[in-house]
Length: 477
Image (cartoon, rainbow, N blue to C red):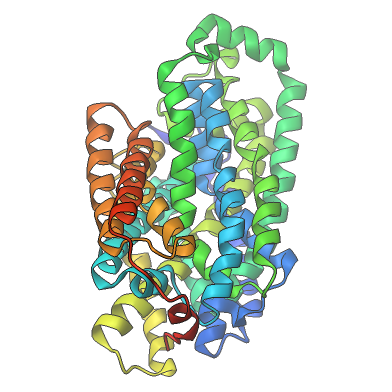
């Protein structure tokens, strides 16, 4: 697609916005990261994050480019259930709230989700889990990088490669400056921008077009989007719920925050963040339903959000959605870079390569690993091979297969170790088969179901005792 067919902002304005907000994130990263000298400060913000910052970082991290761009795409493809189904991602935050409390109690010295799997289920299950986690992390990183390039190209005409490169470089830079402390600090500001921006966009869209005109346009041009009995949409509703739960339950992004939050904060923080996040995909998806009423030609489904907002609101709308999505991108990219860097540093570099490394060496290794993550993500983003939703949901079977092993591991003392490993493997394989044989909207659903059956049956037939004190006594460093 040529930039001149869709761009509302000129490239000079686009570069100016990028420069201003890039400078802001770098400054804030440096400001809040000055104290991150020790490993605990760099990786876990000193394990003393209070409620306001905890809510902000959970909220901002979950408002990804996938929320602000894939939610409109799914509304355009699956109708009402597309945006409502995406909003069920909030269930993952609600359900992780008690898990965060449990994690903090069981592992006061923990660093990563991998630490838990290794101690609870053994090295075989741990290595399977690491492969799943890293595959998902790269899928999410790539989708975020792609979204940055798509957004900037759609609104300003700046080439996809340039926009994607700038966003990745900025997020890597300020994450290096202060680790999780810098990430959480910038997340607080980004949350304010995202919430205010989405509210303004929703109000202006309704004011300029109105519910009746949007409904009439959809009914005339795309009546199937109003069908509440669309089979694919209904399957997606449940699939996305389980996908969101799997994403949060297994990912070190959320475990690192459970370790970083002050004792007693995790449950409240994730619950409040879930309430704040719930309406955002609905609002973002609603904007896409205005496309038929506007007679808008959408060349790629994952570009519908920026194009509709720019069409509706002109220059102001283009600037506003640019700022909102850029903030959402940064808030997720920095979190994922930091958490994935921690996972590789702790579970691969230290546990597999340098078991006697001291904190100073691990701190340097973490910075090198974050830099390499940025470079690899950039290389993988260069060829834009698929849409955001397709890329994201390909990982659904992987993450959904980890839900039941993690829940059983945290609460079921007799959970079977081999059963946990088999649940992840078979859940992933069967889920991937259905992804290709049926569609992306069933992969997580099937993966979670297979995983649950294996965990429950293996534990009932071959229960294994576990001493919870093993987790409490372990100091990974």
